[in-house]
Image (cartoon, rainbow, N blue to C red):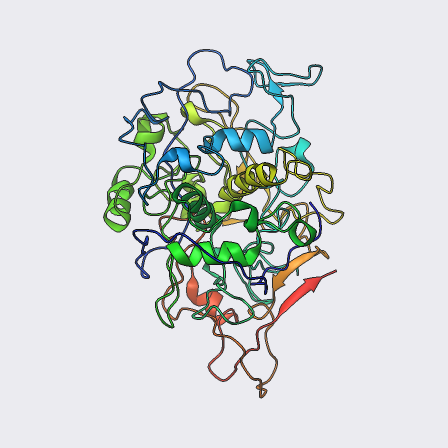
Length: 498
């Protein structure tokens, strides 16, 4: 992976050339949470082919959702597609499969280890083709996970440190006295700034938005020579953070001293990320359409809600699929599995993996002698891995087709059991972490604020894969010291755990 890239705006400057005919503006009040999809996968009829997670090719005249392609000979800027520096970008599902090769499976979904090439012609890789849970992400790929945002050195994550609190390693910043055993840690705020010139730069930017702007910039010919997006001696095969920032602000400008809203990935405005397979259906689909415009709900990406196993709650939002019992308890969606039933079983992929795959592709085009076509996993998992703490999991669930279903959080006496058997995972993970919202000051002190971080006084939006706000006890999070107390001003700092 190379050296860790500081999660801040660096000093390198490049000349941005070839402006766009139009800027893609966004409503600052829009729900900034990632979630939905424009499915690129076709139904798998009968027995599953090896690497079932790889999207099947459709008729060339249609997208993978079956929608007819309308005039794709020109970009938004009016340039011919033939002018794209390295030609048309491959489908994102193909980019991910190339950068993160998946292992072969047979018709019973059993891993095949004694072949080099799978039946679909792709190499027998290191990662699972059937991704069901983030529980093992950041750990040994044999357990079924993928690298985390921290592992890929995503520049604008601003994750919470691994101090043993709930949501550690995620952008949700819970205080040290937050009770993750009874309160949903998605009530804890993220780093959101009102200015770009502080130590936290743009603040947390959901990875699907970075994927969106890099894709648009490449297709529109914005940002100059793609070779200038990289500087191998400083950032290996990753896009220079200052370049990514400039692309970001071209498509998502900051209007004065206000936080920037990033439309969710399930919306056309947010990039129509195709591998989210969001849990929005029926009434929630109607509500989300009213909020975000054109989207794709469960009925479009997978089919009738009759596909839901009886024990699941349809339409609760996010790409996770939780039990009715779990949602009644106010469970954090992140603990529940991704789509594991219907035609898209196991096909969910995190937007940061998609962003990383696009980086890998472009880096290889620019520096084929230095950057391979696959993500550099030579240092993955890290010596101190980036797995996060999960609650106690269990249950012998099945789909309506009788296929084995992933475990769900155990609910006892109306609550989940956190932390689970692996503990709270307090550990010295190497990375760039924000600490100012975690540490609770013991007395009022005179401290100079060096940046403006937004901590909403209204109920905190459930961000990062949450298109529908959860019913969380925000007051508990705020009262526990997550927000800045009225008598205190916290200094902002970036702490590197070692």
